[in-house]
Length: 632
Image (tube, rainbow, N blue to C red; front, side, top):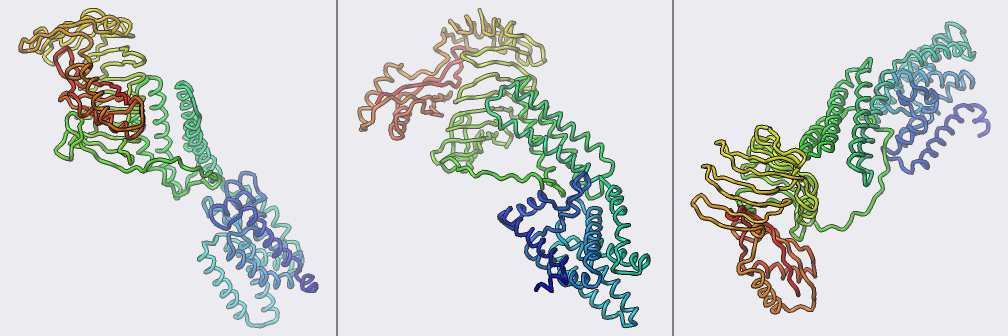
């Protein structure tokens, strides 16, 4: 054994080092599976054009001691033992090592030049270099001894063919293989020409400056493109990080999106500055150019949404995000440096959800199916509660609303649309209540008003359908007209609230109503229908009322509760919508006792007295919301 080692010391050492590196990498990675194995190889010194040609030249050596999988190292070590031992015996250890490493580096150059963003590992380039050198050596001595070269050529062709076939089957680096082979042949020929001795190390010294010059001569376009792509990833990470931050103010969000836009600008400039883009990369660069433009568009819309407090920009964001999907599939997604280990977190217990389509009549009461006025698509849980994103449509398929629900309550941004694809209103809900700024729109799509919901309704700005502003910063006179020019409504706003007398007319010009307000609260009013019917009213007309009054309703609740046998006590508070047809809909449990008692409370409400709809101007039935408490 010792004699064998002394005979082939370099071959044995290379075998031991290669196998040792493979074992160490396995323990580092913990698996042979991809992409973890290649990730670790790239981290430890694999061949990768952008890294090597930037400043990590040492990878030209380190990649020779790494392998991709068990079969890869098994084949290479078998070839190293067969070819290496033969060549080392014939030329000596020193010459053998010079040939091994110089042809291995030349093979790496070939791979770097011909491949795009390839992660390369393996000793095969150097092994093919040994094979090329051995071929010339054997042919030379065959001629010297005047023996036939045919067996040598046949052996070479068979060996080369077998290795090439295996390499192709395993997706090997053919550029490195043939680059190493050519380097081995050239090195052997130069050895013959200049030294006539296969044992003397001389030509190899001349190879060193040549290899150094080649390092600096190799094109750097992959380095520049890789740097550009990393800017894209950095901009993407920056955008995602904004949403990971909690409790950011609107101003902080807007500032973060502005800074993120600058990162996309930088990425775009780097793309424009690429001096050379090979044909294989051109589809990716086209997609990335569009992707960067869309990302900037999304940021601009987000900033505008915050600065202008207008949620209609969400449609622009949604449209741009949908467009992004066409540009995220790349031929060369340079993500090899960015594999993240995701922590598995247990998902919170949630009731099962299923996509549901529900049809509604004009009062938004559920119906079995078409014909209907509207339909909704969204998710309902096992309790029948709407959860998450919801889309309402007119019967003809035109979008009517985009919003989101939480436990059957409107929660989040809502956008409402007319049947001719213009906005009607946009704003936010929290627990089914309007909050913050809302915008309303005229039928022609122009902005009509900007109102705020805090404890009370506050109108900040109002424009007519031509764009003329009547109310600014809560001050001014609101005038609305019918299509024929007749004034429909006129009155004063002060500090954002209706103040003093407001007047309304029918479309024919006859007086419709007269109402008196103080700080936005209706004190009293009187109105006359088109038929001449008159009515006097106050603020109570703005809310639905139970027929017979609240006293009768309370008595009914007491009697109904007595018939319900339950040991559970408490008060169930319900909110609900009363339609213009006196129907009770959208019942919500505001204060709960138990599932059984809550269900009974809803039943009692539905089986009780009818409700009189709210009245606009004391005459016109409109939808309104009521609240009741039932004691058990």
